[in-house]
Length: 283
Image (tube, rainbow, N blue to C red; front, side, top):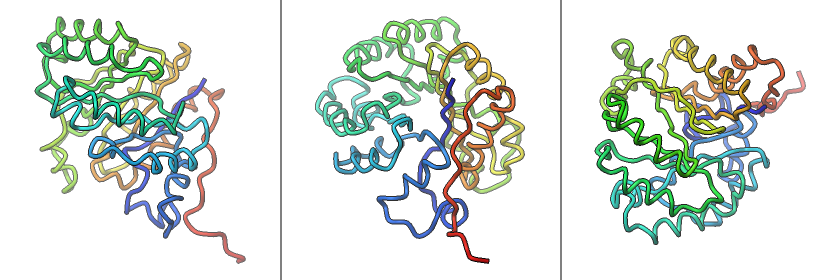
């Protein structure tokens, strides 16, 4: 029984000196984060494929049971829309090789305009991906949430290759008007779609977006605490990423989510003790 939790990134200025030691050289920042969480979203790979030496450093800084959900590059998913980007995909997969089994899934986030008429392209693309990696698909077109037929079609495509459907739960964010600048910005950029919590595989992945007020974030995630506990009882191994608009408290919130699930399932192994933000003193 294992639950992976994490954030959208492993370094964030508001965490420095507050949760994570500061200063830290680049080659030690992920290692410090990995004492807090056991998974991370690989969002940076969407904007540029890193050098293999960089990915080797990621592997060195993380234990064998740490997990990355790495996002496919923008040219593959958004510019070529999963068609004709073989070279970009090959370069990306080669760059990720040093992570080995730490790659929990290849995260295929398609643009909001990618709808039911594009499912043929998605099916063909997923079949071309190496079976050595699991795939996880995030869609944002409203038809997949409002049209039962479109949702079933997508589920069939994903089931055909053992891929997961990644929900991005923004219900808490949009539950009441924004109260901070970061929340107001998120209101203009984040997808406003219904919550979806059906697991297709034994490794479901959830992206949960709360509020900048930690208490409101915790209030909004109770559905996921219960759902994740149920998945664990079924023998699944879920991964949950906790976001807030400013992410200032996302790091301890991810651990708090893990603790909330563990309160329902005491047999769940605890997370390791995090590295202190400041060195211990003699007094």
